[in-house]
Length: 329
Image (cartoon, rainbow, N blue to C red):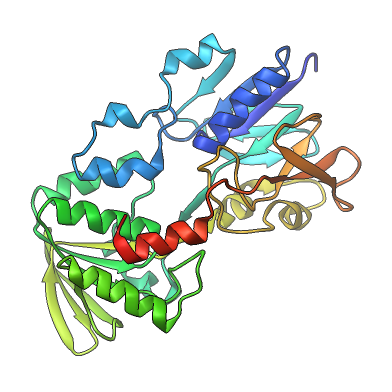
């Protein structure tokens, strides 16, 4: 292989910024950004404002497609990585193409978490992580007036604020495990219930989901403890979990996948607000001088591999989470 070819999997804020930074620090290297989504990079934290109608879809995008070419980054959208051969340094795409690299960053982010007891209902629940999710929310909200929100994470409060702005009737079930990065406490639950109720949200007491019956395309009957309510949508927001399925399904090497997973899946619940994944371990092959991070050798990874830990976010997330709970700010 000739000059360095640096590949980034994932075109969220973290992957996008990684591609631009690598091109700036290594201008002679070829940089390829691979994304399974067909859109260019957008700001996922603004999706609740999009479903509220406060901003147009075009305003979500970080940069136009043409800017990648101008900056020397090859953007490949709508292409999914289905396999990794780490020792041959190859990424296998869903259409069987093999992309060789000298350096690899995986920035696929997290996925919405649905607690295990509720997985049986997941086909009836709506999440909000991608632009396609936002489009689905907007389409459904044009036909329904009553929405049940299950959760307590940052997204659930942002979506609740958006729904109230649209004049929707909102029911809320507080999930004690959804207050990440804060630990749920009775005082926090009390503040959250009081704040939600003050804004017209109907917080369901007890909050234990018993059953969901689909009555029509736009109507569900939900039993929560001893009460039954009818709603048109059910939103599930219980923080995020890492994309463990990505490693389990796609990572393989001659020594087996377990050694790769021990390197790549340490840490959990990342945030990409600052452009580099937080609290995620990122295996880097053949990349030197990676900016804005510290690298430490991994004993099991060999001399040419290291794990990159990103910097701390500038704004303390616990404080922001608490303000979200108290004031839907």
